[in-house]
Length: 196
Image (cartoon, rainbow, N blue to C red; front, side, top):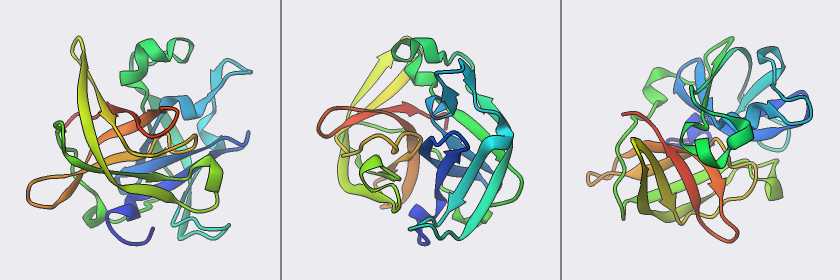
């Protein structure tokens, strides 16, 4: 988790015990899935002061710890209508300090079917270490009106939500095509496309 392109990935956790994955989009801003910050029993999003980001996390140790100062959930996301608003299941978290250098950041890139992909994060079956699928692909681009969902065959379970769906361009460079929002039973899932 200290090497590119994985260096931008961190564990996002809340005081109520929720854990997901997030990734840096600026030195002090990370993105995750909006549903990771929703508390169903209270019917509210978790307050910013209760969100922590741990980068380089492994077995209780980490490279850096930052706290959220602001959360911005994507316009249109409705946790009461998750399936109907999945393409907006994203949230930006502004942190109290940088967690990566600008040089570590990856570009947002458009995806196309067949692109090589990777998906990794802090999944429920091994939440103390980051694991991932480094040999998968974008299998389809689903268009819902003006919105785009990326269907992939990467393995992932609960906890990988909010992870970046990394894709490799023809030049062999990695970029971010979307944010993981749904895992299927078995392998595969959906990622909400990101603006590029």
